[in-house]
Image (tube, rainbow, N blue to C red; front, side, top):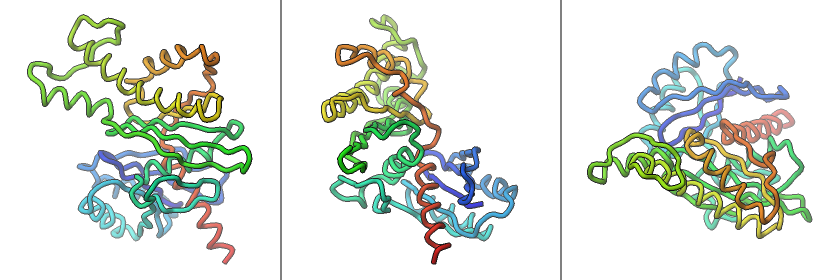
Length: 274
């Protein structure tokens, strides 16, 4: 079993992967950064653990070193991957691949590697600590994908925390989504959902204009529940372009881990053939 690691802003996600299997291990574990020591107990339950792990991270060096030490104690060494890691089916338009968040790049790889619909342009909206909305465009002439880039903004929870800590008398708590909120909690909840939805719709419309075809929209992250209702409503309101196909809106648990699995399989295959 090969260990796959996605070390995000607030949590570290782990998955086990068997390169020769047709499907990966379905369980994904997540540990807050202040509970990294629990990873040791989790690993001890894993049979036939490979000595090499593949991972990405967006955190500071101290946390990275702490995780590395925990894994080394179990005989596992991490190979860290980043935005410069090549993938055959995906080109990168970012000005500096080294500065592209590896979570964004590997999510794009993961979406391509696990796509179950005909090849087409897609948008990945990840609602985590930060919300990222990226376009991965498909070129039917070359049969290749290209990471075009996208937007970054505070995630739903971070927006809430910012209002609670930086304004007077607003506090923290969720209200109802309403067209015309008349209560502060609902006004905040509706406003945050509208901001998140607006960022996604900007990218969706821009991608639609490129292809004159509705792109696949794939969402992930813990803030999805916060945005889901408002986003579905906004997509339906674009029916003047074409009736929205609900099959083009999907949710994925951890596309970045799917991307790391694709690279791990690629590397293991290369190593086995010499």
